Length: 273
Ligand SMILES: [Zn+2]
Image (tube, rainbow, N blue to C red; front, side, top):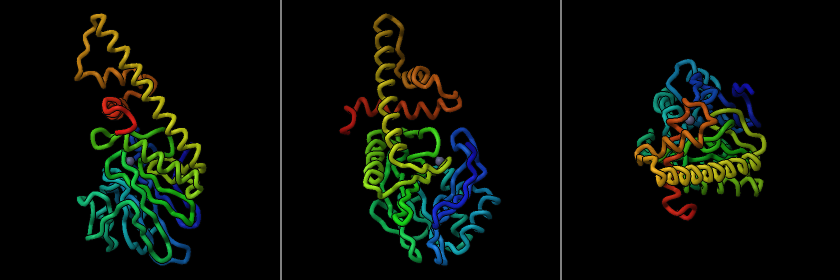
């Protein structure tokens, strides 16, 4: 399945950045949003500092009212300040360190530009500062790295947290169940036409991984009782080798962050952290 961005609904254009990698899939999706007939646009996640990409975003966006960030990771935020300065607007983000100008961004905020409405939903978990942006007029949600167009995301322990992540998936699931969102416009990979089954799958995948981590922990502890030494510093890596055996080894360092998040979650008593 190739993905190269394009136009979606009547309010969105996705400009794909040229930073493809195992972690960023096809590259970062920079979203340009504008109300039909509106003169100014909103740019979500300008992405990496690539002149060709930023030129393409400027061409798609023309007059930009504001830049929004889904979260602080550099593949989304690196060019935010440079891009915003070049078009003369501010950057709004949850984390003050990534803002340009005085305006913040947080749960419940509504960003309104020439009739376009973007509703901000807190979706921490991938990172503590992860936000999603709902476009009610499109029944669409921009999820950044909270939900990807392909595969699953990393819970980037210790900034990210599995308990928060599961609650965020529940929050998005409730919006989908209420038909407030039907389609997912992710930070990487293709758009997801049908939000509800995708969110079901994400929640099921997390539960399955948790079961696998629990099982791996049990077998490592059993082996330790039988005399195979268990070095606690090596525990997350040992679990990755068991649970993520089916995953490309270049992703194991990222998987280790997710395992650390899962171990923290399990030691905290599970879902009711
Ligand atoms: Zn990303």
